[in-house]
Length: 324
Ligand code: PBG
Image 1 (cartoon, rainbow, N blue to C red):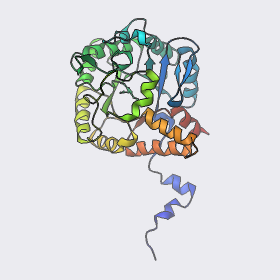
Image 2: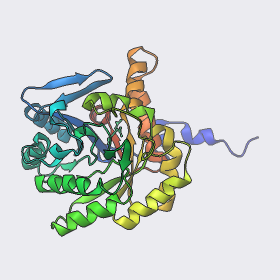
Image 3: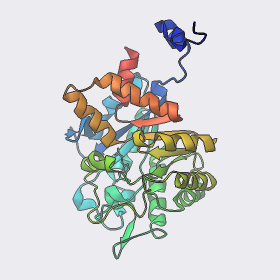
Image 4: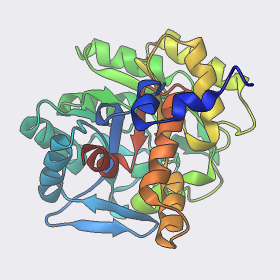
């Protein structure tokens, strides 16, 4: 005799569905997209299969397809020509910046979409760092005015959510104040709250050709060994005015998602980064695992850990799978 048999609640698809604890839908997904200047451009990123650098003309129909699948939020990243990069990232707020123009055009065409930006110097920096480099050091406070200018330019272009990924101290408060002074009180900030110095950003840096020219990012991105420190970052971002707290990467940091979720009332998001995506694709290509099942399992694990939203390169595929 056995009083307790947990298998009884797994005995049919209907019962399993009834007792399912975690749900995930297209509404939870944020799709990162890479933009490039020009026309007719759709370049596949070698280390990130099924993801492309798009020119605006080809990106618009792609966004339309995603919207029809229920994915409405997009995180846009610019692939900038080397010739336009300098040590102060001045192209990031230049009036002829193609990325700002694209934000404007996408928002005009799809007013019901939600567009998120990246705020950090690295895509525009000749040093390939997220902050200003002086004598080999990443200087914090002199970076802030540059980030403010970048954020204001993106707000002027019509962005819905600013995404500071730079990990400078005090940047959320600084950007919040700069936006408010310019009248952009409705523009949200999704802070990269706990962003770790990770090997899993490799394919992303290939996509943008944005790897650091010297050194690494360990003086600003977090040490993967630390958990309590993530709570310090979460507390500061909350006090400084963040609307969402993001954890990045996601898969090796489910405990961080969980602990931040337990300590905040703000929505929490997780960034399922490029390297996490690439390794799943690579194994699936070899026939070592089933792509759809593996992706579904990792995305639900992020929701189960406490993520409200998930940034993932699988957004479109996943939305298609759950629709069918
Ligand atoms: C740069 C930035 C990075 C990512 C998002 N914004 C890379 C980095 O910090 O070097 C990584 C995203 C990914 O790997 O998918 N500020």
